[in-house]
Amino acid sequence: MDIGAPIAMIISLAAIVAGIIGLGGEVMDFVSPAGIALTLVPTFCSLFIAFPTKHVLSAFKHIGIILGRQKFDPLHYVNIMSELAEKARSQGLLALENEAGEIEDSFIKSAALMVADAVEPETVEDRLQASMDAMTVRHSQAWALYDRGAAFVPAFGMLATVVSLINMLANLDFSDAGGVASLGINMSAALVTTFYGSLFANIFFMPLGAKLRGRHQKEIDCKKIVLVGILAIQRGINPRVVREMLLERLDPKFAAALSDE
Image (cartoon, rainbow, N blue to C red):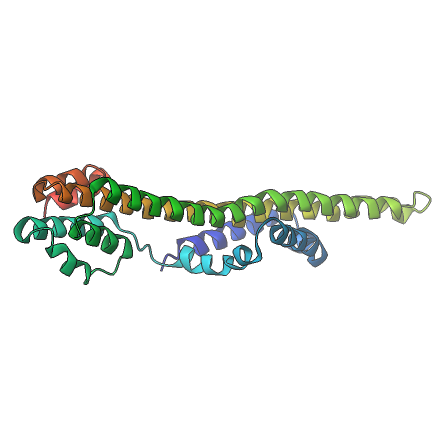
């Protein structure tokens, strides 16, 4: 489980609370259920308008992706493709069909079966690339949800501030000393919703969208290792060279770790 994201959010909120207190403020002055409702409810309603309902509801699945352990390890994929290259070298390309039955990753399995079935290299590359492109389209719909949320929530925070200011000015009575004295208090209460808009955009929507992009890129990198590796195997390239080709695509620290094996 990747606990870095929730821990970072908690620390960020704690730092904001500490900053409020440190600057001489009162935490309760920043608590406004009505302001939160005016900011968040229209934001989520706008997301339902902008996106299909199933895409918005799929946000619950993203929690598992964000908090879950990273499943796509380039080292693991390099090792798998190196093993397939060794099998193909010693037993022939048909051996990949038996190996595919033991592979859980559907992308690798599909690639291995196409090579075992003597599918043309151009067709193998096109189909695997099309699979990656389709995955990118699906994943982009996920992070687009958070990008839109990051744009909507500050706008609705500002809108809520305007609503609060209108109400404040409509009820302001300069003939009453108490009314003038409460001007600062009412103004600060109105600005709280702008604070909420910025808070939710920068601690929730934008970071989670970036997290999904990072997870997607990691998966794409692993699938590219499979693509390069399977085409090299199909061309009959020496397994040692295949491994070196794949190592070149990795971070230097990964390459060094594998080279020492």
